[in-house]
Length: 243
Image 1 (cartoon, one colour):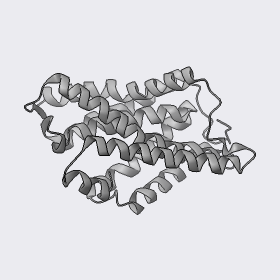
Image 2 (cartoon, one colour):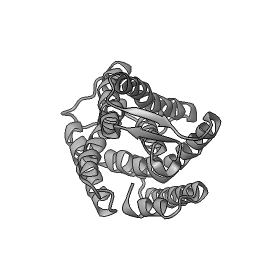
Image 3 (tube, rainbow, N blue to C red):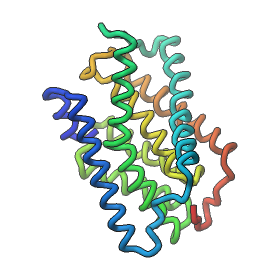
């Protein structure tokens, strides 16, 4: 989350305005990609020739690749006493509705546009001239520079998190061969990370750093990578791919 979005939330958060911001950003990005794609006869490869059902299945796979290990990680952190989640004065139904709206907002404001750009068009272009391993590394650097440019690296925690996050997403994209897995993963981790922010008033987390590292990053990355290695063919890391 960049400085503008953070200050916007702290000055008086409105879920509706946040959602409208996401709709606007997604529309602008999609319009730009379509215009650029139409100016290139090869379409820049960002629009995958897959059915809606296949894309949805990949999105759900990416979402679950994060959600299942993260749930295990949260349980582990609470059991070992590393973290504790205190539900505030709100009903489960309100929290579920809020989580659903936040998921749509995260999907529109960051997961879809950022993934289409970095793990979509940029990743695809780099794949045509460079081996897979270098594509993953270069997109990590480019995404990190983008995050720095928009003010997202505003703390030491973000500086440590964002390059690793880009590396994980790049790995998932290379192994799965589709940007929709990374869109699902991105949507899941950012939805639940933001859901626990104090601004929403749903829960108070004691030991948030331990939970974020263990449950939100470490376990989903490790277990998700293992799962994808069985689900998809092993990529040729030294070869030039067309996926």
